[in-house]
Image (cartoon, rainbow over all chains, first blue to last red; front, side, top):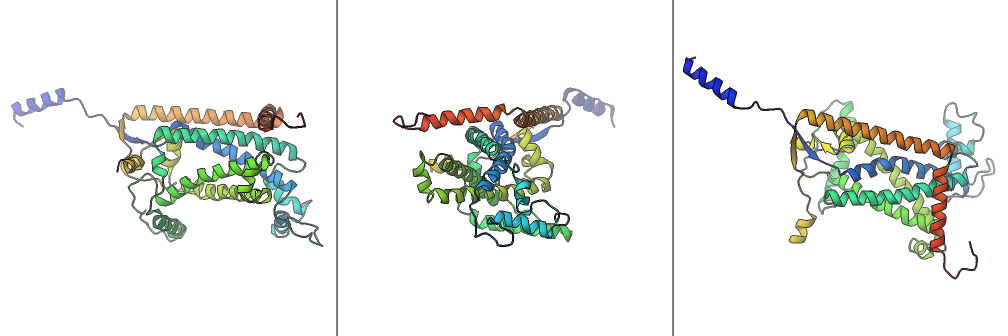
Length: 276
Length: 77
């Protein structure tokens, strides 16, 4: 290398600051959205567990008493069935109580269950407002608005998810359907529907809790007995949402979980979309 | 057209940060998350042992009930 050229290169190297490595991230969730998201876990758990305790005192779905077991409640029947078929459950003291003893606060807990339910319900309403504020402040509400093309896209994504376990078993590489938006159509449908389900749960809850003052509200849902049915099935919507949601979070790697804690995503900045 | 643009999803802006800053912020957020989770657990435990939150909720619910009652109700409570 000629001496003059070498000197020139050294000068350039000494004048040019070394390129520092940088991390590319995108802001994914507003802090209020993250707070409300995580608070939903204890609140929904408290609401479901205490709600089932309240349901136990007066089940919606009843039939004539079974002459053999004396049960008149379908959930109690499920407990009897479980005790008959689940290994180790044959010796359970009270077969009709099996379900309730496992997914509620337990026997003789109606009063504490009602207090817990109201406490969690008020906090759930407050949390809903926090979520709404976060969505508005962060502008994230635009990402969950459904689009006309979403029906077909949601079916496509559902088929993709349904085929994934088989693909894993067969060790096949599958390409995630391409998208240029924050959420895929199925996610948009879910994230748009769940707040609506939450809102309906609150309305039906008020109609049950204050049946005199909110008799008009119960009437909208078809009367007091119907509003209880609505409230019961809305709970199952949450359960049915949470199960695949959690599975997909863990299946999708570290980034979705981290972004819901820190608010930032590295995958999204690389153009890799999270599926959970 | 203007209304459509208001509802349209906006692309997230990519931000470049130094790896050290990124790691520090991530660590801070995880620590805060862990501390908050422990706080919620502590509140949950106090529910079982002391029940002050349950009593607060009951008192608040009573206030709500009072507010919802008709001012001309016959029963005073």
